[in-house]
Image 1 (cartoon, rainbow, N blue to C red):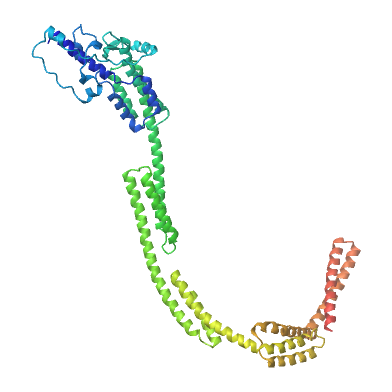
Image 2 (image 1 turned 180 degrees about the vertical axis):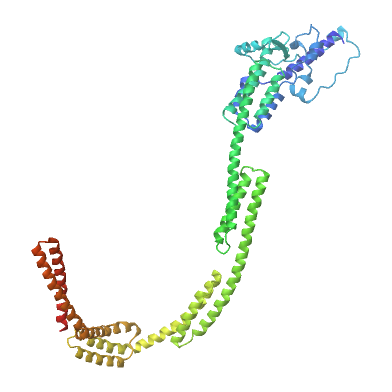
Length: 548
């Protein structure tokens, strides 16, 4: 290969590198601002780092082209670039067609006669601030041919080449790569400080370490690694905190599930004969819905815990359902028996509904009612219908009886007038002055009372009460007369008078003795006793005068 051919091929490779290297972010600051404006979620963090790495220039160290190019290679800006390499996307997606090797070296005349391709436009590198260049100069340098070196621990490490630009621009390009890493470190520090979810944070730290370890940038590598070390420690603590919080939530969820199971077991363990099935069934359904909601959106408890709790819960629901079915099956049987018994009572009640033996039929209806109350209830629907039939039979009988009584009451209205006159005559005997005459007159009234006959049922109580008042007054007068004329009463009264008079005489003697002795205590006691006996004596004397 001639020197001119080598020069042409070197120029093509250099321009391809420049075209690819031109497809980079304009500034590190824009990348940081974009990342801060749209912070990735924990699951997207690692992906964003990988995407950033994928967007970096594909050619960083064109070592082969550098070795093959002679020292007198022309400026890339003056070398023609083939159309296949004019756009970076074409380089990335469609490989250039192989160039056929020339059969012989072209002569100088032929080479001069060949038309020249238009000069390739080398994209300008983004501008770098003086402060950034000053900071980058602390950690690396760039040579005139675009080679850039990193100073790390006193040693220079080649990081790549950016040909066709000034040394400041080449150094700034590799410094911006380091700034991109720092921007991601800062973003991660903010996330750790705000206690964002720690998912994939350690992966991000590991990925950033790997990028720093590739030594393809210029900056304070050791400081960045130290920040990553600190971040790694903080992330471990954050993971521990998240794990503790998760365990606390998991413990609370486990307790809630345990409470659901315990309540279900408590409901299933009740006596089937005393349980409130409507309320308990509704509560069991609520527990099941709560269980499904917790299983769907709650914290996972682990297969062993969830299986064990579900088996207990399912067992409780199965027992409850079995008891409920057995209870309602027995209830249906009891309802059927109660229905049959009440239908028999209804048949008797309907047979009595046309009876005119009012007293007997009324007694039978009372007996049937007592049996109805003692018979167990059927289902609500059946029991209401049965009671309606039984009540209808009673209503027929009592309606007929009431109609008959109303007819009788109309016939008894004349008797009522007679008895009202007799009551007025009897009450005129009060107050009693002559007991014997009053008794004789009352007996005449009674004889005419019986002859008058019955009165309407509604007036019976009022009329009889009026006559009974006079009868009670005559009875009291007879008892008072007997009390006064009783010999035994007179004898007891005379005996009591004699005893009190003797006691009073003795007390008077005691009072005189106490007064002579000047004993105030005995004087007081004698006077109190004497006054009491004197009061009794006065009362008995009045009673004796009444008996005289």
